[in-house]
Image (cartoon, rainbow, N blue to C red; front, side, top):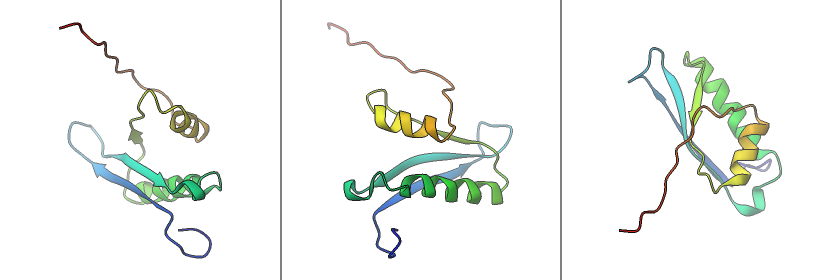
Length: 94
């Protein structure tokens, strides 16, 4: 929501416990309407998610960024996320 309480996007995350020694949060998606971008709303949403995850005993948040989404990559890097691995592909001539 923006400062007037108007819905301008959403953030979807879950606390995951399988396949890990400790529970972690996974950010599935964050979306803001184009007119709401660049106003600090996305950063505020991430901060709220971090607080909620911490309140639930989670100390790590994971996410996936598609390689072509350079603006999302820069956004997450600016917020302190770090690259943990790379997934690559190649088109075959079958």
